[in-house]
Image (cartoon, rainbow, N blue to C red; front, side, top):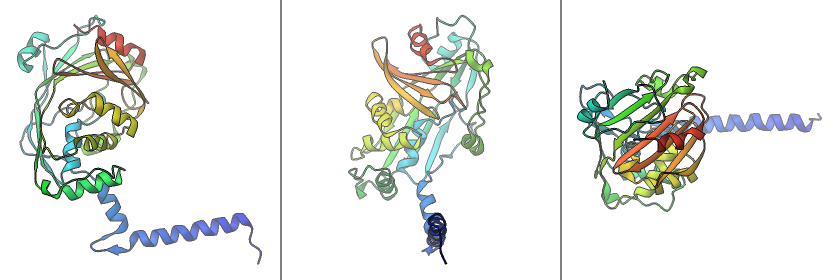
Length: 308
């Protein structure tokens, strides 16, 4: 019987699929190979240790890096402080609640909506085996995690911050697992006027001296959706205490290093389908600034320079 080349290719593909499926479902210990693979990709979700309401999701829909960093180094984490957000009437009330006076965008004339971002503290114990596996799978083969770090304490403490929001912004994403997976709803043209500037003091971070913080930071950033090149540039710009309170935007399309006054900053351009079209981040005087907007990314630096 003559079989055409295209038919032979289809048969070969089908046989390969059957073989892979069979291998994927062969039990290895208590799990199949497939289950072990997907289990290796899961990161522990912080477990609340208080009855307080969860922090509101950032405007860009992402997770704070402190959560991702803690989940990377540990099999389980505990949130020991999780203060709810609170709206305030004006900058004076915000300064009293947050302990520092927030800066406002002089380029925007409308009255902003101001929110106090609650304190958060996340603690974890290092799991060397998990961390070494994740680093190796992510391509950081030179990074070594000493077994002596087993159970070593890691903590991230973020003080109260302030979010100042202008224009017609979409409703925040609900703090549920399903909402975090799906992300925010696609914005409409009405949201083009939306701009928000968050201002959060750098975090207090406790990590063992032997921990390879550079490799772990790059791994966490890649888990959050950045490319390896972007993760390296981000790490060089933002040390752990500053990076911990930043929420990288979803759907990064490109980025560039810019200047806000005399300070280096990173401008991230997103796809804009399910969130802001840009995010600009920088650190000044111990405060981490993140400016996000739904309009043109060309407006980001001029807006940032108008802070006063």
